[in-house]
Length: 119
Image (cartoon, rainbow, N blue to C red):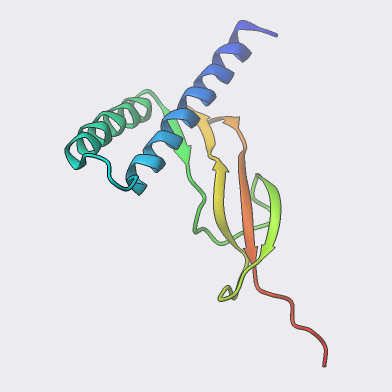
């Protein structure tokens, strides 16, 4: 494996790790010290800002309408009540690019309208 490929994999893994931590902190575990959560959130936001300034884009697809032509790895299609169109219900790994070059394809679960049963 080339040094460039190793570097790209490291960058994608780092971006994914920061993204996961940020999502967990935003959810806020019950009983955690709110002041500590705010400090951690600021540090994570600063890390994300630095990645962005360096040309790294981390895309969370959750809530987007699903387009089969989009470069995403769908891990499951899940029938979900209240859904009228296919929508990304959960992003398990974000799409990561560096200066416009794709480094990691997003992995998602797509929520679909429930199947109608024939009478």
